Image 1: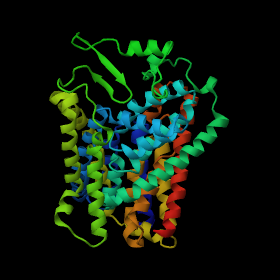
Image 2 (image 1 turned 90 degrees about the horizontal axis):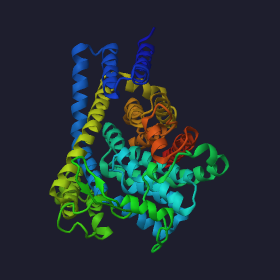
Image 3 (image 1 turned 90 degrees about the vertical axis):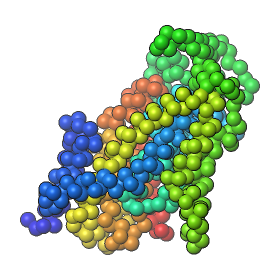
Image 4 (image 1 turned 180 degrees about the vertical axis):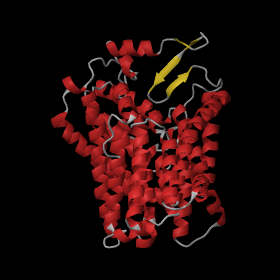
Amino acid sequence: MTDTTLLLLNTAITVAIVVGLIVFVKINPVISLVIGALYLGIAAGLGYEGTTTAVVTGFGNLMAEVGLIIGFGVMLGTLLSAMGTLHRVVDGMLRLVGAKRSPYVIGLTSGIVFPAIYFDVALVILGPMARSIALRTGLSIAPLAGSLAIGLEVALLMVPPGAAALAIAAALGIPLGTMLLWGIPFGIVVIVVSILLHSLLMRFTWNDAKDDDPLTDPEHTGEIAGYGLPPGAEPSGEQAAIAHDQQAPQVDRGGAATAVTEDPQRGTTPAGAGGEGSGRQLPLLVALLPLLIPVLLIVADTSSSAAGAEIGLLGFLGNPVVALLIGLLVGTALAVPSLGRTGVEEVIVRAAGTSGVILLFTGVAGSLGQVIAETNIGDLVAGLFSANAAYPLVLAWLVAALLRLAQGSGSVAAITAALLLAPVVGSLGLNPVLIWLAAASGAALGGHVTDNTFWIFKTLLGLSVRGTFQVYTVAQGLLSFVGLGAVLVLGIFA
């Protein structure tokens, strides 16, 4: 057996080990990736010390690239969520474009406007909202739920500062500003096209009797009473009863009654939280400043550098870490009047706990990437695909798709596929953005029962298993193929 064949075999065994440990042995992906990296390093001839050094070095290098960015991004997203800004953006867009276009509103809002909000957090916020819009407007839940599945996946994988998108881009050496300039237009296109295709498909395949959970009710979904009604309309009958129940005093863990106000424009806020000014509402543009300021600074720095104008101060302020820190400070200042200092601190602590999990996984993905970089896998793969630059893009998509089907996690699938193909970028002169978007598109394919989010979708939106396949698996499958097509088209020009 030649060295080339042996190296290919060990690479395949590494992928099989990672997938097998996650799927069959039920070991956490973080541990599974480390085990896979250790096996590949030793099997590829790095030696025991060289392998462990590569694992540690890879972890540290990737953390240096994206550690603070991910941490600040998750904190900022969680803070905006607690302030109810996401609800207000969706509500404003619905009033602007009308209820019939609500699937596009939900998809674009979750995918493009708020990618910093952690996937599960955004799902918990927008899932009940989608169910409520369906009930209040008479629209089917199918296109609404499908648009949510599509938008959240795009936010995670294709638009910064989505956690997986940052990890992939760091492994491929893509600046955050470049990611924004490519990821946002790409995300808009694939979201709109995917929602259009999914909505058309659901007209023929969706069956309320089989797909909608008959146990679904307002209490089960936690929906917002009156959401989706025309401006000024008042809920009546059952809707009014729901609203009354939602605004009734609730008992906290300490036994004290706390009045809770449900408002689609504000979210859920304990009455009197933060004391002064808790009843006032910031103008929406002001509430969005914590998000807009970092994006504008990063894009301005990237654009000026591309134009050959190096501005020292702008380079400092446009650094992703500094820009996100500024956004977080602005968000904190805006949140104190409504949430109070204690409330803001609780939000930040909760976000830090969430980002810790993301950072750990991202770091071990860097460990595997470093081991791959120190072997001859890159030269080998580059030789296999030197004839046609489209082959690596299709392979990145295919590897990510197979990994997603096998073990469920889109993040694991996308990052692993990107790391395996990263060595091809330099040798073929291929734009690394294309590898990123191809892997991200492939990782959207086929989320099903091995994906814990599949079951969250089912429960939160009140769907049958068959219905969840239609609005989660099928919707993201369409997204995957639309993304692949868009990447291949870009490959012709990029």
